[in-house]
Length: 216
Image (tube, rainbow, N blue to C red; front, side, top):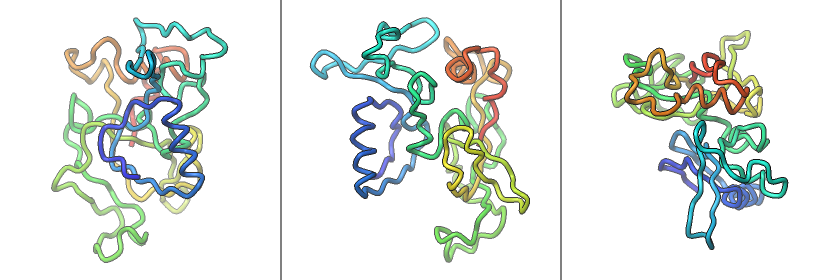
């Protein structure tokens, strides 16, 4: 399966189907960002897609013990216990926007390569920290990222704190930023900046937004 669009909204059942197929050998490739980010659900004989968004709209099933797993919130919300990282290896929480809305406005727009010896770069001539795709700005708008650190040899590696398996291999990085009230024009922010939405979902307090602003 190839995901090449803006696959942001998924129901519990949709994700079940895909993950069950992956367990049976299905190969999946994601060529898009902000994927599998919000859980939605279908009602009225599957004719209506439902998605309540914070802070002004509370999902009426929030306290229903039989339906609370279908809560319309971001997949990484602890109440769902089903982070998108376990499917994608990435999350919008640690990515964000590139070259738009005040987010990394003068960044290269490409990926900085860290593992040029990997088979995907075979015959490209790319070397350590070369830029990939910067001439065409292949990194733009909404991108997914990962919580990572730099190991003793200078390579980026997943921390595992966000649900990404520590066995995941980071081939390249590009800086990204979640929109926030200090850097993003007000007309873009809407009701709640992305960084504050993530802070509310993951920590319960939107004041913790700074820890979710810088991503890759």
